[in-house]
Image 1 (cartoon, one colour):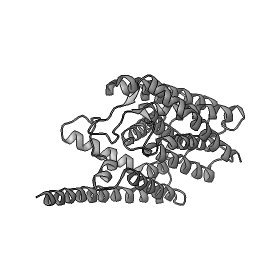
Image 2 (cartoon, rainbow, N blue to C red; image 1 turned 180 degrees about the horizontal axis):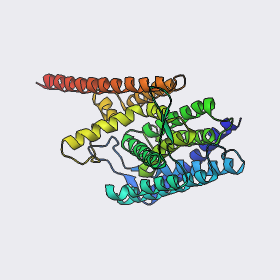
Image 3 (cartoon, rainbow, N blue to C red; image 1 turned 60 degrees about the vertical axis):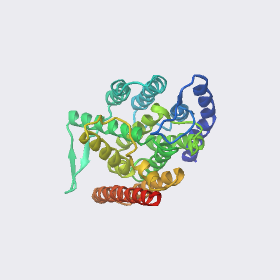
Length: 348
């Protein structure tokens, strides 16, 4: 019953807050203007991440004061750090949505959020050894690894935010899977389980307004908050890094591929283009909703393998995921090239 209440509370707050945030964005002209690289054709309000964050914030306070958050896995300090880190990300996100900050200015806020989590004691203490046992990390290595992991997850969802409903939906799926896996390993009614469901509910409520054609966009703050939360919950809940990699495997590999290609071409790794996987799905003829649903299904397919695979099996699944991603991108590029040739032949 508590689990259901966690989802419903997050969803209810999000459903109530999103229309108000939308009006706020319109009033202050914080909108995303169309351009040739983007999908939408009309100015669309930003700041949607504020609705998700405040829904998560208020819901967390309710369950925290009711005694359902703090336990052996997550401390009071860490819960407070999550809320403060989220607030920092929102401040940076609002500033970016309004003033279009430079990349060097954008990264300040994720670094502040990560510093807060590290100060609260969040670190990766060990990883599973594929040959058996575990590889324990020193305190310094654990902090560095955790920082890079959270930063990587933040930028994965940031770059993924290119289609209506994509990041909010995948975060909902990811948080739900982390919750289910937590039932196997965590204590009953664990804090991380409740937080995962609150996050899922907050994103689900927002998705009602963000589904294509979107009435409001996540904005910078929302896209990075989703990645921050998935990355942080994966660490705090324990033994969930491989799970998060399976959930976010396709987006992570897609981002890595695009960044490497940009650097290879002598461009900035954070420059914008239409080479991401979700754009390639559109290029081969899928419509907006079909492209998003395909990525949902891939996320569910690989994410649910973590429900029945042990650590070694997850590592094998990650290898299969990598091969799948290479084949998928190759297939999409070939299909797109054939489509261009056919279009040119038709015109001639």
